[in-house]
Length: 405
Image 1 (cartoon, rainbow, N blue to C red):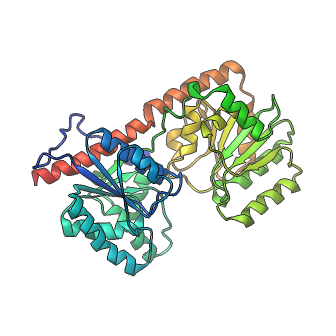
Image 2 (tube, rainbow, N blue to C red):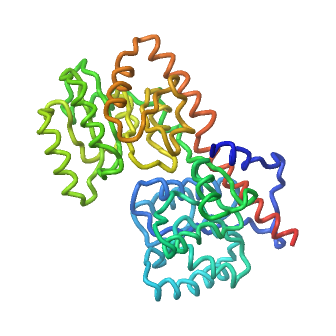
């Protein structure tokens, strides 16, 4: 199993000394990603790590093509540098080598941490020119259909440390890219427990959301959050709800189509074919996901392809909600089967329907017990604080090695 191969990869000295720079200044860490325009895990994680760096007394720089989250960087006292690092144009990528190398020298950067393939190629050679440690985070499996694609992906394995966001990803990069165990650090994505805390979500917020979504009182709610794309499994959930033949529940597909209008129409047509217009609704966007989880009786992740981690599953458990996830990828590490939720085979609408029935059949005491265990599970294993601390440990490792050299 993947866990057997990689579970020990995070074993490090708890008392690792924080290295001091020869000139006494705090370490400067440069994170690089294509843009800060979305609310995905890469972008949000970058901001969270930048905040951890500054809170620990370091200096945090982020280079990207900008976006809405630049404002969040300033709030955590990090600095943003505008660079054309989202481009996959070979000429631009080549010119970015000099741009990044100049930035490293001018800002006296001590560690470069890259989170995406195109900027990673430029940053790798810039780090070689400047003799600065190069760290990568492997955020997904990526497509490995041919030799050229595999070569393009391989830059994410060239870090002096390669951070994998789950043991599943750690096993993937070992099997497909031959990365040595000693280079890999498993650092699960972290949930912001200040935000996803059921005690901090007011009844007013939940009521407002229920009114906005025109949900009737007293009817069980099943929710699948996630952008509208085929591999997220919305069609599987629609079939599962149809198989249940229940009209006394509501099912919410919460997420933007991000321009996939044909797929959205396919979902709408499938809902109409089953006569489920009053049962299943597509909600474009939600600005208050903690309230959405609290409003919901059961949260589903029906992804047909393995999730690298599966942020939704952890957020829902942090809010004390039972979850159903597909039995592959990161969910195998985050769900305690038959304790905090259920795992079902990929694409199996019948099994998903049976799990939904189980989840909605929980009585009050059983639901409360599940909530307590789920909340404790996430707080002990998948917090934002743990993610940040372990990432800073990686920076300290490579800085200490540089000092010894």
